[in-house]
Image 1 (cartoon, rainbow, N blue to C red):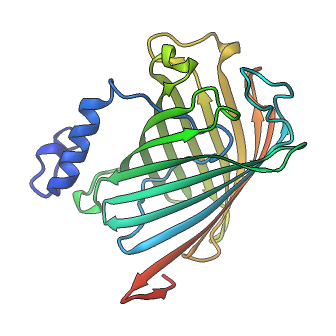
Image 2: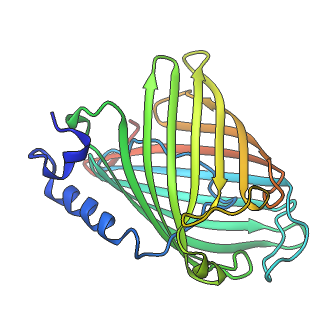
Length: 279
């Protein structure tokens, strides 16, 4: 069995997977990176979409208490509704690519296009028999200046998770950086996310999700300038083809939106012999 520190030399590792990991490691310190904001609020699991399958998700987020004034020409978040369409296609048992369409409904405006992102992701195959699930996503995208001072951004998100009986644990120590905007001067920033949940029944799990942004990895901002949110959440496992998640986020520092209500509704489609199959 291959050990984690030697995965690039593992004889069972697909050549494409090894090359992808090498490229990401070499470029990690040089490329700019992207933030989640309030459009797609999710702690990523280790699994990728199965080959030949498509996952369609709708992320709906309402900021009940947020920023009420324009800052750096960016629209306020208070009472804004964010709708994000995420479509993820599985290509192999270790590689997928997701596409995001971000939109926003402002309290005194219409429904507007915010931006788009693309997110390739690889995972360690189950055949390697690692004690935890490990995957790595990278996300590149554009957001209009009305909604973010940093318009072009990049993210690299390691993902580690583990299921222990009824307990589920996940950690996403993401690194983010602006490619165009005032955040370029901040360098690479640390934006961790984590989740712990417990299966109360076969179909209902409850837990906590955490999202943070601490500032540049070369020197974190003072605590009162950092962003930290806790989301009590509910996950419903009503069917293998559906993903349902609800949560209410509470901001714990001044720069953080104080109250956000979020929901994720996802549907898996499997395509076989040119026909849609529900698996």
